[in-house]
Each structure stands twice: as C-alpha cells, then as structure tokens.
Amino acid sequence: MRLAEGIRRHGFRKWYERQLLQGHAHLVLTFLCLVGIFAALEGMRGTVGWAERAEEILTALFCAGAGLWALRRYLSLLQGAELAAHQAECPQCKAYGRLDLVQSDASGDRVTVRCRGCGHGWRIEM
Image 1 (cartoon, rainbow, N blue to C red):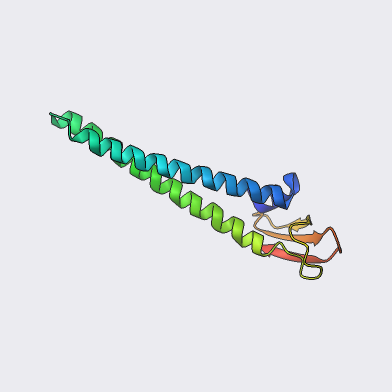
Image 2 (image 1 turned 120 degrees about the vertical axis):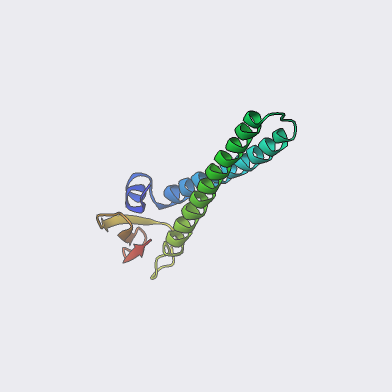
C-alpha cells in the first residue's frame, strides 16, 4: 500500500505497523521456501528414476524462486517503512507519527503532511 493511501486510510502508525507485518510475513514465506528446498533435496536421495529426480529438482527450483521473490519483497517493504519512519518526526515539536496527510503526488510516494500537535507542515519522500 502506498504511503499516501495508507496515511489517508489508517494513519501513519497503523500504516507503518501493517508494512512491518506484511514484510515479516514474507520473511516467514522465505523460511518455508528454504524448508521446501531442503525437503526436495532430501527427497532426491531416495529417487530411482530420472522422472522422480526431475520432479524434485523442479520443486527445489520453484521453492528457490519463490523464496528469492519473498526475500526481495521483505527487504523492500522494510526499507520503505524505515525510510518513511525516519521522516515521520515533526521537525518543530518532535512528535512522532502524529500527522495528517495534506497533499500527495500522483504516485503516492511523496506526501506533504501536517503535525497534529503544532500544525507544522513538512514533506515525506519515499
């Protein structure tokens, strides 16, 4: 979910929490894919024919591809969330995450926000 849409729907803190939860779900998927790779490699030891061995190799390759995608997604979500989190503190009153969306660009990655406490405005860029 884009930053502007997330702030508009849930507020910054909930958006940040959801990004972290979604990212860690991808990390769990990465771990499960790693287990799948090891299971496929272990299953290859008991195979007799090339057909069975090819099936285990394809399973391992599929798990490796899905695991790499999930790991990349995990890192991307965490990097984006942390980048926004470092900019979510009001420069004037130092309140963290208490902000309202004022304006966003078309992509939703550059937003202008206003502090709920003091009304100071600043820009957050992803």
